[in-house]
Length: 342
Image (cartoon, rainbow, N blue to C red):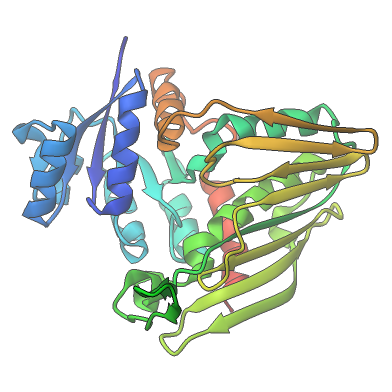
C-alpha cells in the first residue's frame, strides 16, 4: 500500500501524542522531524524510529526535503503564521496545530497570498475525523432529531487546582511564561480551547440551512481575565442568520467537561466526549425513545486525522475533504474568536 510521508516541525508534548497515531494507520509514515532542541530530536528519533537522514535541527531543511509530502506544524500558536507561509511557499501541504492562527487577519493573509495557487492546508482539529462526529452528521442529515434548533457545547477543566499530600486542594500560581497564560504566545482558554466548540458550532449551524456564517451575532459574552492579559474562564452565545443558536463555554478553572448537546424539534443528540472521544458514545433522546450508539476507537484519536488527510493526498485531492476545515472555514471561525477575545 502506498504511504504518505509526514514531517513534523516542533517536538513538544502534542507532537508526541500525534506521532503515536501513526501506529494505527496503514497509509501514512512519520518520515522526518525538526526541532532546535537536540534532546527532543534524539528522543523522537528513538521513540518513533526516525532515520538520522530525516532528523533536522533546521525547520527549513525539513521543509525543503522533497521526500516529505505533508508537514504538521506543532509549534506555539504565535509561530504558526510564519511557518505555515514558509511551508506553503515551498509547495508543501500543511496541517497546523490548533488554533491555526492567532487572529483572522493572519488567516485572511494566507488565503490572499495563495489565492491563485492550489494549497492543501487545514487546522488540526482531530475530533472532526472521529467516527462519532461522522455519525452525528449522518443523523442530522437523516432528520433523526427533526429540524435543528440549537446546541450547547463546552470544553474545560480546572488545571489550576492541585491536591497536596494530604488530599487538600490548593490553587497553583499562574506562570506568565507558560504558553497557556502568555498572551504573546497565544495563550488563554479562548485561543487554546475555543476553536473546538466554535468550529463545531459553525459546522452544525451550516447543516440547518444556508446561512452567512460571517454575520453571526455575538451575545452574552463573559470572560475572566488575569493580569497576564489572557482569559481563564469564558462564555459566549452565537446567533446565526438561520436562527440556529449555540451556547459555548471554555475554561482553565472549571471542570466543564467535553459534552455537546444538539437540540432538534424531535429530540436531542448528546455527545459525552466531543473532543477526545474517550469511551466514545452518543445518546439520542426522543419523546418515545432513548438509545445509545457506541464506537470502537483506536487507542490514539489522532490516527483518524492522519489517515483521512493521507487518503486525501493519495487521492490527489486539491483540498481537505469535509468535515475537515478549509481556509475559508478557518477564517470564519477565527473571526468569531476575534470577537470573543475583544
